[in-house]
Every structure is written in C-alpha cells, then in structure tokens.
Image 1 (cartoon, rainbow, N blue to C red):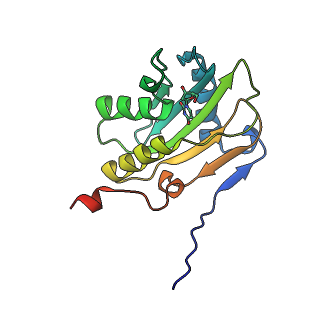
Image 2: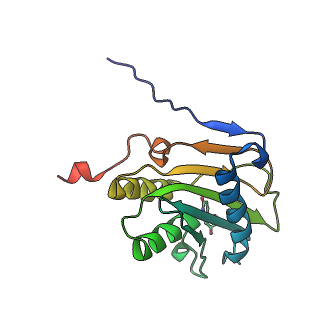
Length: 161
Ligand code: THU
C-alpha cells in the first residue's frame, strides 16, 4: 500500500492593498461588478472578472432563476461569455468577489465544485492556467496559481480517449 499526499501552495494577503497593481485593479472590478448580479433569491451577489492575456477585462455575474437549479454561478457565466466572445484567448487571472445584503463580505470565497470542473476544462481547452484572486469586499485575499489545484482527482477528457 502506498500512502500519497496532495498539497499545493497559495498566497494569502491581509488585504487588497498588499496586491500588485494589476491584481488589485481586477479585484476592485470584481467588487464593483457584484452590483450586476441577478440574485434575488439568495441575495448573494457574486462577480467573476477575467483579465485576458491580450489585456481585455471581461465580467460575469451569477444569474439566478425562480426555478432554483436553473441558476448559474458567476464563474460559469463568465466562461460562457469568454468562450463565445473571445474564443481561445488565454485567461491570465480571474478575480472572484461577492456582496450580500444579509452577510458580511469580509473573507474570500472559492468556486463551487461544478465551477472548479468548468474552470479546469477551460484551462485544458485554452492550454493556459487561470490564476485565481479570491476576496470579499474587504479582508484577506487568496491567490492561487491555477484553478486545477482546487480539484484533485478531477475527471478529464483523458478518460474519454
Ligand atoms: N455562486 C457563485 O456565483 N459562485 C460561487 O463561487 C459560489 C456561489 C452563486 C450561486 C448562487 O446564485 C448564489 O451564489 C448562492 O449560492
């Protein structure tokens, strides 16, 4: 029997002011764009904003539905927009933030399991890692080098060949 360990390194910053300018700008954008979420059921307004390798900044927000399972997370809304409007342009970084009328937005959130699967498919498709910058409206910020690290033992297209 072999015992194996999965671990990865990530960065934790005390707040947005410790980030390099490019990252701070993207997180600020994500904080602003939470205002465009459609989240009347959860009141949890999420924004995912991508900085593309060609310098463009593209936003996405969660889109809920009266039929709850129809709702889509900000990350997957963004990936759909990117695939349709900017096909094959690598994503340099993606900032994810949230705001709520009910709870404090003072710590980072990380993508849900379904979004992790979607993010790693996009990384494989464009052949480029997506750096994640995770932070609330205030408080600590986490930076992860590649979304793939968030989903060990992922199911990938390799299994279908
Ligand atoms: N949500 C996102 O958009 N991204 C995440 O990373 C976590 C959750 C959305 C889904 C739903 O509209 C609301 O947040 C509450 O779960």
